[in-house]
Length: 147
Image (cartoon, rainbow, N blue to C red):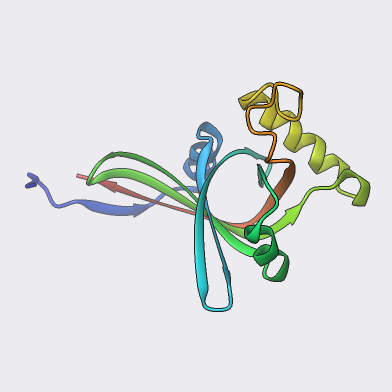
């Protein structure tokens, strides 16, 4: 592929990074334990500095219980040199209303129900994903490519 002008790679503003997080609902969670990295796609909502999602019981939770620091990436790709990408870094936590995170649990549930109205109801399309989580976004950075 040839372009008339070389591509430019720039930092997204904080405002543009937050807007990208807010208008998308599929991202990738990156986490590690010892010398092994894993990345998993999942749906999410972004609300006031938090990434909220849901998952099921499995090795991801075991790894994140030992090492809660993680990264979350969301991209909008329109072409090879026409994309925006935001990376959120923060601490992963399971949201349990009985253990003091009721406000975050309720915000997560309301946000996720805006995507999948049957979340945690009898008609839930993914009932095995019974655990809500939050990532407190301590760092948000964005990059962009343009020709």
